[in-house]
Length: 265
Figure 1 (tube, helix red, strand yellow):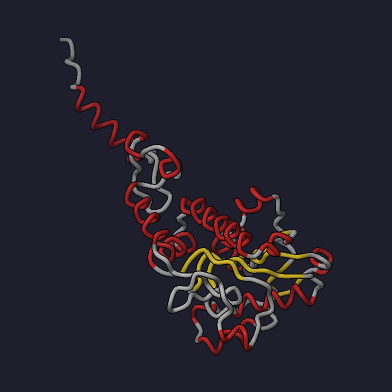
Figure 2 (cartoon, helix red, strand yellow):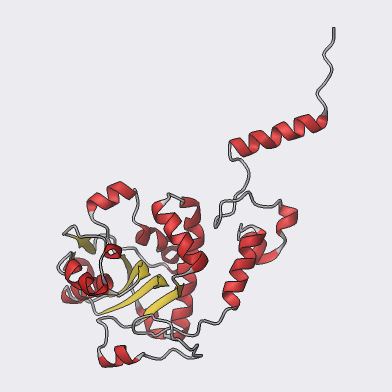
């Protein structure tokens, strides 16, 4: 007896189930949800980003919120938004060991969740979007501070070997990849090494962080001497880690150090 063909709707449902099971559908790089079809995604820059509709809306809302210009010395956002970047009172009284700090945004809401998921939940699909944020921060920073464009290479804040093996990647280096490609800046990952394992800064009170990180980095004079560099990290809280890195590189002969971070806590 000849078998009756399966109904088309059953086949369609089965295909969708298999597609979801094997993750063959496109997924939003921010939240991981299955993205809309090309027709639903829309045209232009928003559709090309690969973000789902909900995350595009969040992105637009975040761009519309005026956080003001952060302090170019420490990256901290003012309590009252200011149109032009101005040094805060602390940075005027005690300048940091770098030139300028470039920041993508405050460490909260969606940006915080994306960074944490990327680092600790192996959400590597978020990497491209975070790289784009780093690139945007650099290009905005160069527009405001043309002297930053003189940087000759990128130095990611290094991880200790044990932490690198545990995590599988250095998020600071990964964040710099798109910026490096777009602006032809080499990534000098060996210019700075972590020579001492430290307690994670997030586990320490603010006053203990400077002592914890002291002497943890060594800089290579052969790479850095006579050069201007861009130091890249994901999050800046007190700035103790970045200060220690900058001092080590300046002691090794770097002409200038500027800093780029995704988020300022």
